[in-house]
Image (tube, rainbow, N blue to C red; front, side, top):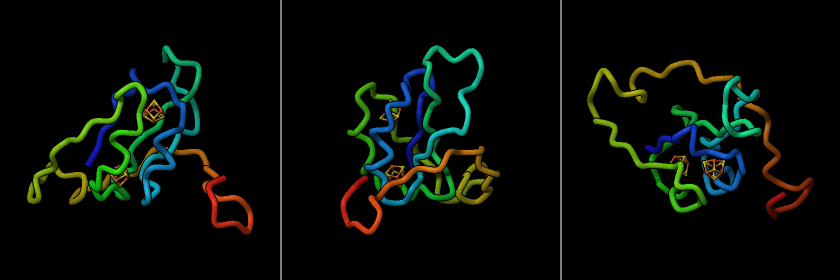
Length: 100
Ligand code: SF4
Ligand code: SF4
């Protein structure tokens, strides 16, 4: 799966549309003390299948592949946590088959 270095994420949203599984979503609010004015993107662990379609989409190299052991008590796939509150993203135009 992938992880995002939050400090390197400017919140440009480019990666969102490269994920077929809606695993890259923006936080609902920008954490205080953050150096970028826009909220970061997070990886919703329960949705990420590790396809790596998103990896090359980030202009600041904030996305990184991380190894998840197939059998591990540390694996988020086996021990899913509650995802953080994310904002709603409109991925498609109304009544259209093209990107919004
Ligand atoms: S690795 Fe695949 S499923 Fe996971 S966030 Fe990237 S595009 Fe989405
Ligand atoms: S493409 Fe990179 S900088 Fe832009 S929102 Fe995604 S992770 Fe953040």
